Amino acid sequence: MKKQIRIAVLGLGWMGQAHSRSALRIPSLFPDRDFDPVLTVCADTDASRRERATADFGFARATDDWREAATADDVDAVWVTAPNMLHVPMIEAATAAGKAVFSEKPIGGKPEQTVQAYALAKAAGVATGVGYNYLWSPLVIHARELIASGALGEITHYRGRFLSMYGSDELGLLTWRFMMDEAGYGVSSDILSHSVSMAQYLVGGIAEVVGMRHTTITERPLPSGTASHYGRGNPGDPTGAVENEDFASMLCRFNGGATGTFEVSRTVVGPESQNAFEVYGTKGSLAWNLEQINELKYYRTEEGPNSGYTTIFGGDRFPFHGAFAPGKANSIGFEDLVAIEDFAFMQSLATGGGFSPGFAEAVDVVSVQQALIDSWTSRTWETVRDLKAAAS
Image (cartoon, rainbow, N blue to C red; front, side):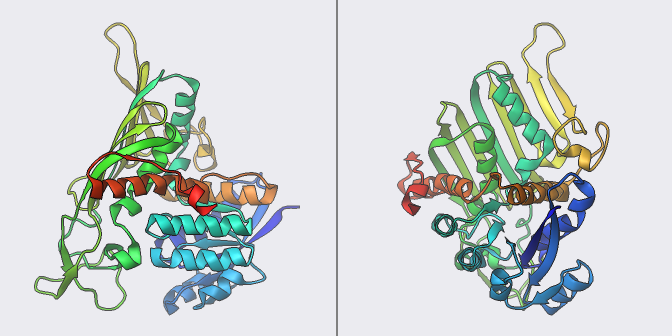
């Protein structure tokens, strides 16, 4: 008999909806699973979202009190999909009640908040997961396997970037994402976390870093009422100051000796969602870009006129892909990655197996972020310290 995993979702915004859809899709996608997901309770302060939770998504009930949902007796696992400033309080309540917790990144918005969440979960002894969903792309998994096999030889250099346009409009509203008390840091929390988690997954730990930051758009129109960060004001509207960074870059050295470069921005014009990596080794290289999620570029050193990058297309020969589309070069998309990570997390809960990335891996990411933040002030190289030690 399959184990029932009764789910609470805290916040039915974009990612709350994506994870809720995953719970609905998983039974048809993964028939050999050891669990059945049950959408038990959704918490949201917006009445229309609460209505959608029960009417459209099939939650048994909805509430405006996230604490009730996070600690309910009929809940086994809690998904934290609310704005950053609520992550730690929600995690604290859920872990104290003995619930497994899956949190969207960055778990708070400052390194110390991620460390606090890790300490809470460790003390409670509960299972955790973090939404570094791009790690679950079948071709990213294949890239990791190629690297581990030695196909690229010794890894010499890594280039990571996440260039996005979501903040490129000067009339984009001053929502919580641009405020230090509500979002924490800017792109170093929001999207550099994805780039660093990808690098650690593919190549390994980072030893030292140095970098810079910049706020490109320093003021934005003030929102009136509830607004998304895709909302837009008008010329002449009252404005307020942007409190966190629009751009960050980083040089690094990996524990294994490879060099690395990273750049992230929410205000560049052109790349719409260019979460990408390039891995260079002594025998070859790999390149992947979210904007072409179903393509992996592979270069192998060869003699003769036919050297060059080969495109490997996604397909059911790679992990998880066949659950969504059979054959070769039949595409999957962003929410499919969310379904994969949710399946893997709940499967681990049902079987008692381990799951990664969890809160420990999130601390590995913010350990790098903290060294980068320190370098903004010192203007010199900073050693990456494992912040898990501070939580022990």
